[in-house]
Length: 149
Image 1: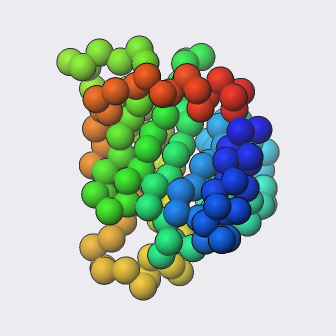
Image 2: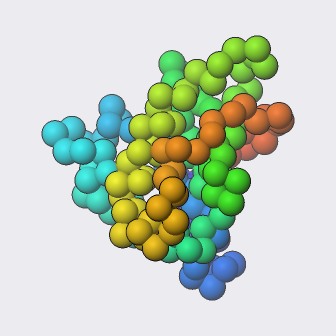
């Protein structure tokens, strides 16, 4: 799985303190076991925090692949801008971001999962409050997703 490779490479490159997190494709409840648990608890059971996540103080970006109706897009969370760019090769500039609800669900669960680290940030900080917008260029989407499938 490419997200694991990218995570390990990022940790090696940065001396163990990842500035970029690469989350796996299997992130939403419909693709995971433990369906009776809240999503952030499922991630804990799957050991995702140890595998894909690090110290929030060092994190600058998070890449989240999202499957929707047999089509992948990529959400790029830019922490310093409190923004989520959605890279979607099939998107029309005039339409709304189709995956907004899934992205918001993931962001809410990241808030719950990272609650202890978020406490150390300003009280207004919340991943769920980040602005979701369409990225201007989606040419690089296929490289990440084709390797992770």
